[in-house]
Every structure is written in C-alpha cells, then in structure tokens.
Length: 133
Image (cartoon, rainbow, N blue to C red):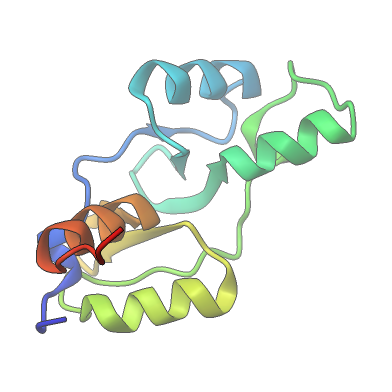
C-alpha cells in the first residue's frame, strides 16, 4: 500500500449530536444517513465523545432506556487522529484496538472528519487487485 494520509480517505463533514440529544434521535440520524456513528460535540464544536452502532447493540442487549440522552451511552475516552497520519498507521491501530471509527481532529478546527473501516476497505478495493476466485 502506498503512503496515503487519513485526510484523503476520511469522510467529511461528520454528523454530530450534543450530549443532551436523545438516544433515539441519534439512532434515527444514523439510519437516515447510513452511518455507523455520530460524533458528540459540545456547543462550541469540541469533541466530547462518540456514539456507535456497537453502543446501540449494548443498549439493546441490556434493555436500557432509549429515551435517555447520548451522554449516558457515548464513549468519552475517544482515540483520535489527524489528517496527516498515514493510513497504514491508523489501520494498524484500528485492528489492534478493535475500533471501526476514528474521529479526525485539527488543533484549530476541531473535528474535521472521521475515518472508518469502510473508508479503508473502499480504498483498498481500488488499489489492490482482487485475488482470483
């Protein structure tokens, strides 16, 4: 894989919600947009957390209240990257940690995108020749 940077693959802009958004509203947004996560930001756009489809699996399995707010279920210890990180490095991290979504942040602009396993897979399907059947 050639050296390519996260900024070239990331999805942008990202869908965001605030911590006080009801969980079912966040779920509807994810379904409507066909995405697997929403970024949780405060009023000034600073990263507060991430809410993923996996969080909803846990929510359903534990039969929790879907009228609760995002802040009750979001992950707050979020691993981030920047647009200048090599895709190989972030892919290695995602495999090692079991992440499917990594927000892309900029020191001055805040959250500028998100890189997902889908983004990396789509890129790889274009640069690698598929193996014969």
